[in-house]
Amino acid sequence: MSSLITEDEISHETELVWLEDVDDLDYVRQSLDRLPTRRGKPAYHRPGRMVGYALLGSAAKASRSSGTFRRRVFWLLPHDRDSEPKGLYAKGAPAEAVDPRTLAPRVKGVKTERSEGGPPSSAMKELGITLPL
Image 1 (cartoon, rainbow, N blue to C red):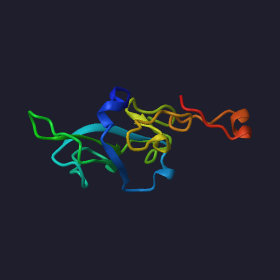
Image 2 (cartoon, rainbow, N blue to C red):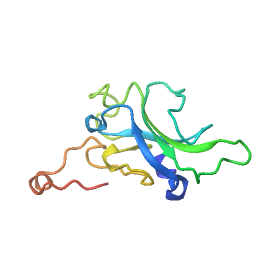
Image 3 (cartoon, rainbow, N blue to C red):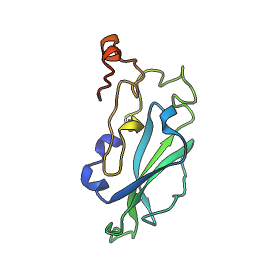
Image 4 (spheres, one colour):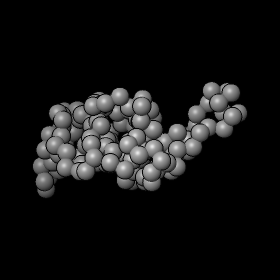
C-alpha cells in the first residue's frame, strides 16, 4: 500500500516511466515490487494494466537474500474509476492509490480531492488551489 511506502525505500529512484498519459487519470495504484533488475519495463502479473514504473540508479543494492530490487510499479484494475466511472470507486479511492500528478522520483505521492473522486470546493476552484488530502 502506498501509505506503507517510506521515502528511504524509494531513495534510489532516478526516473518514473509512464506507459500512458496520466493527466487523464484521477489516481493510480502504486506498490513496491521485487524485480530482477534496476531498469527496464518489468513483467506484469496482476489483473488490469500497468501504467508506469520506476527506474533505479546504479547505487541501488539488491536484496542479499533474493537478489531482487524493490521498485515502484503503478497500475490500475479493471474496476477502477478510469474504466468504471460510476462503479465502486466513483467516490473514494483504493488505499494504495495516489494522484499521479503528485508523483516524482523519490516522492511517494499523496491522495488529493481529485483522486478521492470529489470535486474541489467552489472557493478552491476560484483561487485555483488543489490541496493534497
